[in-house]
Every structure is written in C-alpha cells, then in structure tokens.
Length: 571
Image (spheres, rainbow, N blue to C red):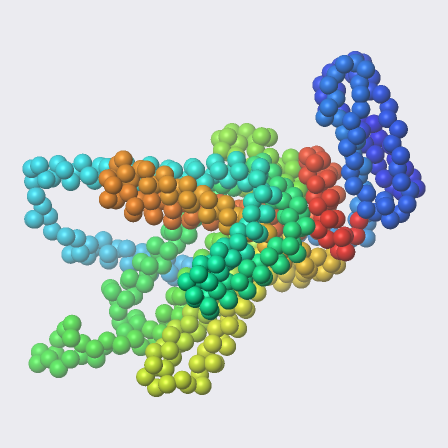
C-alpha cells in the first residue's frame, strides 16, 4: 500500500493491491502513478473515492488494484457517548416489574395445577372410540399430520433464514427501489379497475394515493444508496454474530411461554377462583345453595384486577421485546467499536460453532440485569398507552352501538379524538424508545439520560430528518411478502402429498402465515441492527474505518451519505 498525503487539503491517498500482496514482496514492483489532486476547498469537501487501475511489470494480475481517496473526519470537537460502569439503574422500576411478574407467575402455577386436577372432566370420553379398520385409518392419518407439522415447521424455520441471507444482502438496493415503486403502481391499478367498474370514490382515492406514492418515491430515490449502505453494514455485523438468529427464536419462545403463563393466571381467577373478579347474586333457591342460575357481574375489584392484568401482559411483552433489541444494540456497538469481541470466527467451543460470541453473552447480561430497570421503565410507558388505547377503542365501540339506538351523540367526536391522540402518542413513545434503548445497549445509560443523549446527538449532527426515513422497513416488508409466498407454496405441496388435495389449501394458508411470523422475528434483528448502525455512524464514523472492518463499508457509507443529505453532511 502506497500512501500520499497532501498537507494543504488533508487528503489521504492510498494505493492498494490485494492480489500483489499474495506474492513475495521482492517479486512485486508496481509502477508509480501520478495522480493530480484538486486543491480547491469546495471540490475537496465534495471529493469522492477514485478507482485507478495500474500496470505491474511482474506479470501479476492487478485488475482489482484501486487507489482510494479518503477524507479524515475530524471528531475532536464531538461529544461521544461514554461507557457507564456496571451498575443497576432505574432499580425501582426493575423491582416493580419483577414483583408483578412473580405475582402473575404464582397465579399461573395455581391455574395450571387446577387445570391438571380438573382436566379429566374436560377431556372427551373414549367409550365411543371405534376399533378395527377405522382406528387404523385414523392412526395413519394422525401420523401423516405429525409428519406434515414437522416438515412445515422445519420449512418455515430454515427457508426464511436462508433466503434472507442469500437475497437481502445481494439485492437490498433493488428491493428498496421495488418497494418504492410497487405502492403507487398498485394504487394506479386499483384506480384503473375502479374506473372501469364506475366506482368513482375508490377511483378518486386510489388516484390520489398513487400520485402521493410517486411524489414520495421521487423525493427519496436519491436516499436509496444510503439506506442500502446501512443495511449492508448491519447484515455484516449480524453475519459475524449469527448467534443472534438463535437468540431471536429463543425470545419468541419466551414470549409464547409468557402468554401461556398469563392465560393460566386469567384462567385461575375467572374459572377456579371467580370470587376475585365476580360478585354473584344468588338465585331464589329454597335450599340456599348457589347454583348455575346465580347472576354474576364483574365487581369493581374485578375491573381493577382486569386492568392490572392487561397492563401486566403488555408491560412484560414489551420488556421481553426491548431486552432483545437492547441486546442487539450492544452486540452491533461492540462490533463497531471493538470487533475482536464480536466475531464468531474468533470464538471457541460449542458457542463459537453456533455463531455465538462473547459480545452476545455480555450484551444480554447487561440488558437483562444492569439495564432491566431502564427497559422496564420505558416499556411501562408504552404498556400504559396500550391500555388506554384498548379502553378508548372499547368505549368507542360501545358508543357506536348506542348511537344506532339513540342517534349521533356529542361524545362520538370525543372518543374519536381520544383514539387519535392515544394512537399517535403510543407511536411516538415507541419511536422514542427505539433510539433510547439503542443508547442503553451501547453505553448503559439510564432511560432518561439515554433519551436525552441520543436526542442531543441527532440534533447536534442535524440528522433529525434522517431517522425519519423508513426505506429499509419497506424493503423488509416486500421481502417478508416474498418469503411468505414461498413458504405458502411449500405448505401447499406438503399438504397435497401428505394430507390430500382437500387439506392442501388450508396447509398453504398455514405456511403463508407461519412464514410471515418467522419473517417478523428475523427482521426484528435486522431493523435493530440498522438503527444501531445509524447511531454509531452519528457518534463516531471513523471507528468503522479504524477497527479493521472492510474499507468498502466506510467508502460506500460516506459516499451515499453525501449524496442523500448534502445539506446535513458536515464532511
């Protein structure tokens, strides 16, 4: 590598020859190439890396040899995040979360025990089971159902992962562009169909949405390379820590277990211990013994318990999800700043074979223990808003039923306004949590400090508009639809050969839905990684070049950033 430094413009010129480095040093004699560097300040600020091929007299193929012009980004005046010492933060909220979790789990244990105790009363009797040839046919059919379920489950677990790794990285730019085109195109097709069928309202709405889609696509088309560069870097960090895919499935299993425990707790209070939530008025019986004719209504205490259980469900679900996202932020941050700890190729033992790295373990421990209080606090805010949203929607539904009987009431507008306010407040809170939890995972700040730090970071860089772009989300949605269609076709084939032509359609629908669910799980890893790359790039872009990463990542990211945001770019 030959390096030339222009002191006037602070531009570093590097000449690399990867093929030549494989030969003995004495056998490679590259011919020097004179490169003219423009000294104009404006041109140097807008300089782009150049690629110049050069000949080699030793006969070695140097077609891949390039000369890269890079700009040294001055970070001396930047306020960087600082790694916090290991300590539990926001402990009060963490303690409250654990307290409610233990309470619900205790009720779930009682519910499971009572369900097992009374299970024989609910199971169908086997007295009417047929023997002989019909029984053997049923056994054969049940065996085929088991084989179908196992084959379909293996398909929806393997196929999305394989297609994601093969297609998303190679065709990420094309997928983003297609996602921008497909929305206005679909609305335009709807407009044509509605116009032919003389459905004027739908035609007008479709035409309006198509025009808006075209306007949005043309306004963000130049930002596609920047979104692609972020996505490629995020995928590179995931490939070095492919144990995150396993963690994604484990978190999904944890969410299913929590849903089962919560349902068991509800079963205990509503079926086996109804006195907790119901107040029963006994019917007029001569013997005074309660019967099934008793009138039971939900008591005030029961309504409070119901709201608490709903809040507990949303709160714990958000905590499980956000621990996972915070863990990914910590792993990607470690890969950005200290890549030697976040590469599975350098890990030994069983965990190294499955793609796990010390960064995954350390980040998961930090998120689950030290930052549990911070995550619980942010998740509680979202959980409360979800409960309010549920209450408002139920109230609005009840008001609509009354409106059919009494006519339009003034409260209809109030409920509509409340739903609009709560829905948007919930989205805003989740949006704030996305970036706050990234900072929690990166540096270990408490919740409020992390939110203020990441907000100040983007404001200082002038990047408020950048984090509002959802180009990556659109490409992932398109990819999810494609993978779901593939798994649906596979489910159709499996159902046709194992179950029969009648059940094949149902098997196809099941494969489509399961494929979409798995995509949501896997794409959660990608989206969290992309968000973390954005924060790391805003905090310290030079670390991507200085820590032994592929220099192509840094070059593509800088070029795409300048092209996408020329006014916000400060280098």
